[in-house]
Length: 160
Image (cartoon, rainbow, N blue to C red; front, side, top):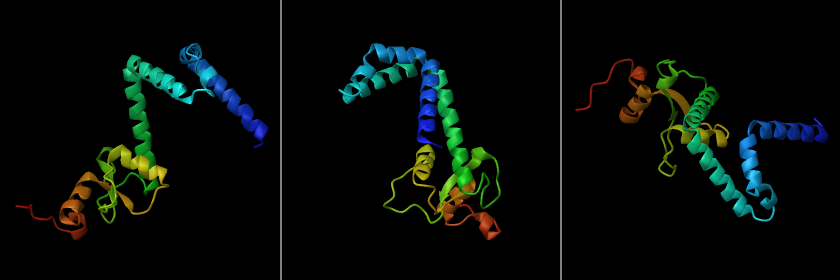
């Protein structure tokens, strides 16, 4: 794709965005966001933060829905990157029961990341090796007993 074509697509996308978010665009324009953009970047950031906070306060249900959708997509993308939404140990396929497991355990130096923070980190680092999809039961058993009962072929006795 030629640079001129890319620029035209970008301008068209910006126009569509301005039309969809007309009120926010006008508010930023009135606040001087576009005039100060080059001269005062700190002021621009502050205006953006306030506008974002105002929108979040006015649209809590829409924000919650967007966050749910973002998390769902992130989880699906992560599961797909690590072999699909199926437990590598027992074959569980219910996505709500699945999680990401450190194959060799988390090292002492590695920061504790769980849930969405872990999934974001994995994506940002190009889906590194050393992780797998396990259900929460298999993951917990692996962490507690060192191996999952499915791997042994017989159930483990409860810890007293």
